[in-house]
Image (cartoon, rainbow, N blue to C red):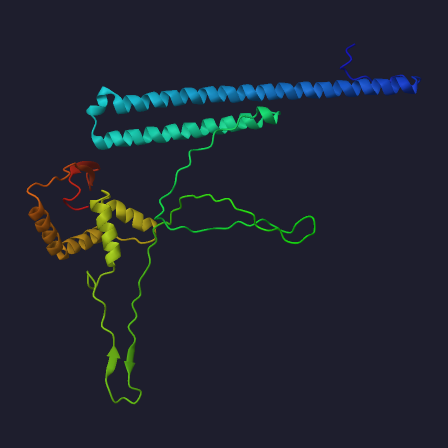
Length: 302
């Protein structure tokens, strides 16, 4: 009979008390030993699982890095359209960053599972990079739940602080500008009515402000975002405006600012005998045909 098996002492009621106590102590030591052995086995199995997962991720990362180098420096990269090459590299860089984050998470789990704190290997901190000083800063002070000193002397005094910066983004927000022009009249009816003149607008009788028109124009001509995509974005923000309306706004705006554009062209030509322009075409959706066509960003409707 093995000592690790359960043994019923009730079958031997005549055993001396010291024997019963000794047997209970032995059983307790065996249970502790068994629990420690099971815990050690579970820790080893967990580490083996972590190592297997880590090796698979490292192999995946190595393959992604090879794909990235092949795409960027391989002979086929010269035959790819620059825009297509940039998109391919962007997708590979994103996949590499995702795999690196997964590897870091596994390494953190391995370090956390180490019982000895001195043997825990923490990841090296990221390289500190400074954000542009021109950006506005919004400070959020996080105070402790209580600054009452445990010794009973009163409130603790501030001896320093830690600062960390994160880059934030305020999503685009559409708003309605309501222009109110009150009318005033003599209470005795002796004179006429006084009212301020309506402010001048670039597109009279239309919704868009000059700031919105500038945003649409920059997105279309500088960021290569066609009007049909802008219409989808605006609808997602709760402003459903059709592409044809945006095209009408851009056409009327172009006609009104044409003198400014002509003046800028004269100034550029007067200062130099030769101008360099970017003739790179951008793929533009051909409505109704389900495909894209190459077009200069500054030509044709959006």
